[in-house]
Image (tube, rainbow, N blue to C red):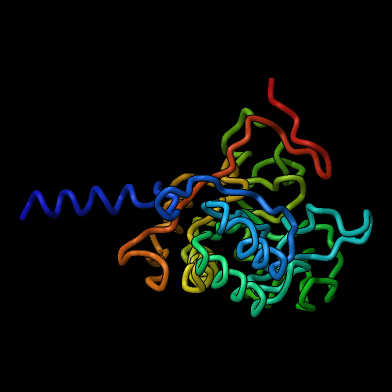
Length: 264
């Protein structure tokens, strides 16, 4: 009995490292900025028949609309809510994509932006992909909801409020990354809002997550969020399966709108 419990615990701990692809399928493709309807077709027409294991998709939650420059890729990394509503498609289209891809053996992995919300300098209003109101200057995101209490403004010790030294782990994790409003992941409320979003995606049928900007969050905070996640949907995965987690930890410094500069 003790051996059974030990093996069960060991299997549970390692489950998040299993990609949850079907047997013999090992390749995951990144269909960056593709529409959900097009990904569904790609799964059925090519990826499934050719033996691909999965697709990493762009962030599916509502973001700020950037007009200068016109609609850059990085606006997808400036969330305003956890509604499934972006230029890739709406919630119904996302659900349909996940179902159709899973049905032909292709798993979906979501790029999860959970470190921050949009930039502090974004204008107040409804200039968002789903029309939700936000006021970044006042830290108001009523569609979540988040307020000023849910950000790290008081925790960051730099004069600018942003990261000034990448050699200081406290700045890297507690201060704003290129002006993006840093969420207070030490708070259980914030963790719960994020977990609710990820659990909705799990229940829809996704297989796992790429955690964006993991370098800018405390490992204990990430673990606390992951510990709240559901098992995968048993329509497509064995009972007890855990979401596959892979994290972004680049050895470089972000410059807004430019390539990541390698730290020397």
